[in-house]
Length: 182
Image (cartoon, rainbow, N blue to C red):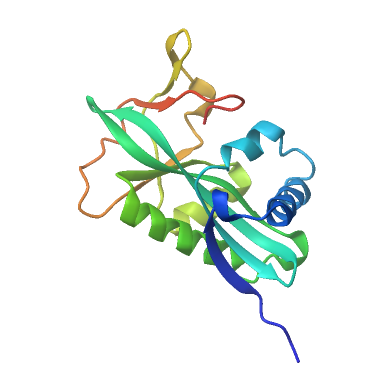
C-alpha cells in the first residue's frame, strides 16, 4: 500500500519537539545549510503548514504576525517565512500545497501578506498573484527608521480582499527583529 503525504496546519505552540526538529532539519537541507538560527526563530510564533510523510516533514511554510507602516497607518501583516520542500520531493506541488494554506490564514487573519523572496523562489509567488513592492523599504530599527535598500527588490505583498488599497510605489516599513529584518 502506498502512503499518501498528509497536510497539517498547526500553531508553533502545538508543535512537538520532534516536529520542530524535523522542520529545522528540512530547512537546513532545503537551504543547503545556509538557514541560520535567526531565520528559524523568525518562523516561530505563528502558524505552520506542513506536508508530512510518516515522521518526515517534506514541505513547510510559516506565517507570523508583524507590524508594518504604510500610508500613515500600522498594518497587521501576515509575514511568510521558511518556505521549503525537501529536495527529493520537489516538483510535485508541495510548495503550492503549503502556500495554499498559508494564504488562507493570511486572507482571514491579517490586513495584508508579505514575504521576502530569493530570486529562485520569486516565480512561485508571482504565479500565485503576489505583487512586487516597488517603493522603498525601511525598518523601525533601535536607532530609528532606517532605509533597507538591499531589500527593495525582494519584497512581495498580498492584498487581502476587502482590505485597504496599497500604494505599491510608496514606502513600506517593517518592525525590527534580529538577523535579516525582511
